[in-house]
Image 1 (spheres, rainbow, N blue to C red):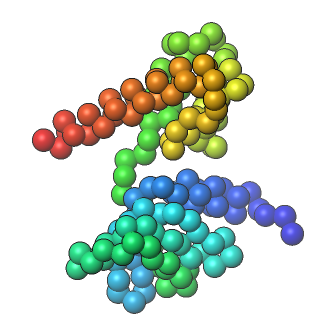
Image 2: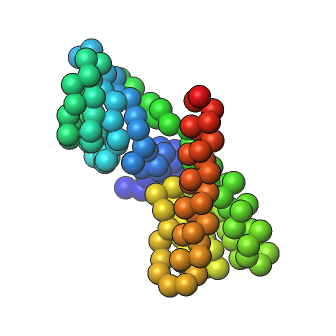
Length: 149
């Protein structure tokens, strides 16, 4: 059976949380904060890595079954892919950088893909894109640290 548009968007949003820090509240009264590593689309169960509960206990990996999850909240600021795409647009010819907002992907010269997790590709072009990506991430981290002081 085909998935509805709403379901596709829902699972795309859920998949975008992989690698992000999330807070999961359960109907058993537990709250866990950790990096989301995966989910099961059939049960909506999630896997967290390096999760801490409200008492500070650390769990290397924890699976939280979907039927116990009350809410799942991303705690990090979203990665500014649009801002990164704008930086690439200043370095490459017009039309050679595409930002696919719904997919959260930047495509450079139809060869290199860039996501929040990094740069996919090899060779001189990918290396050039990776340098810009790394500098952008470092600048964003510096801004966050500056804002928190």
